[in-house]
Length: 348
Ligand code: MRU
Image: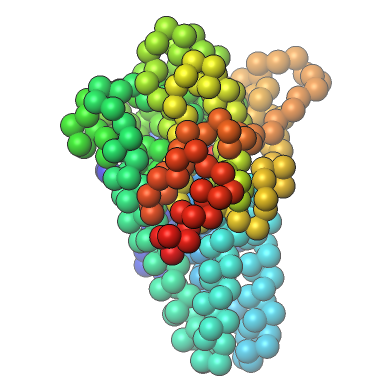
């Protein structure tokens, strides 16, 4: 891949600014945790695994800058920093997973000198990034086996290199199938209102010379009915214990359409996207974003002033619509509480 989504460089966090794509490829530098928190909230960086990496790096930056002479005040302030980063976006569980991982690391080394704890936290944040890249490669390899030769794959939102440390989850499967010479093609849903599909998925697939056709969200059924879609592969923001999956708003509609047309609908996600503490998708908090994204999303107003607007950023696809969940550990066919439990127990 010819871009880096996020990296720790010269004691700063560097991110490609996803609000500026595809027009401009600009990299922002953040030297404090407040900047990273603002970048997550403002979608400079987005996509569940990438948000997790950003959160870990934000926590490391914050810890490094704590001015405390004793451990008690260090850990008090550390907790506040973690809370602030946790408050940025509610749906992608990878954010909370990464913060918990950083907290556990700090706790495990609680008695060491404070500068040593900070160094350990920076190393851990970099490890989160490196591991995510390896995990995406494994998801890709596991998922590519499910993709038939010459398939046309519909994807929604952006679950690509831009949404992860690199390579992607859904786009990881697509990249791996492409690299395996399967001669695949991609249909990318535009993904209103924020246009992750148009702005990001189309951009990164074109950069890698993977054939992509952009459609607006309301065209998916038309192409399914015409027999032009072989399968759907999407990412996830949070997967409940029974397989119900939160992903970008509009994913549920794609899954229902796919079922109607007998098209396999697959989810690709790392283990860190599973929230086994919740029994089903009704417990997943859904982020509500600004109405401006709906009425002013194209650089100009597209609706009357004062119109009432809803803007939920995610929806939940019930597990019964999902043919398979692809993780770095393998494939969960027909996800249920039992098949998911078995997946994690057998591959612990
Ligand atoms: O609001 P976003 O752009 O952060 O939403 C992203 C998605 O819904 C992705 O499909 C999901 O996070 C999976 S990314 C590998």
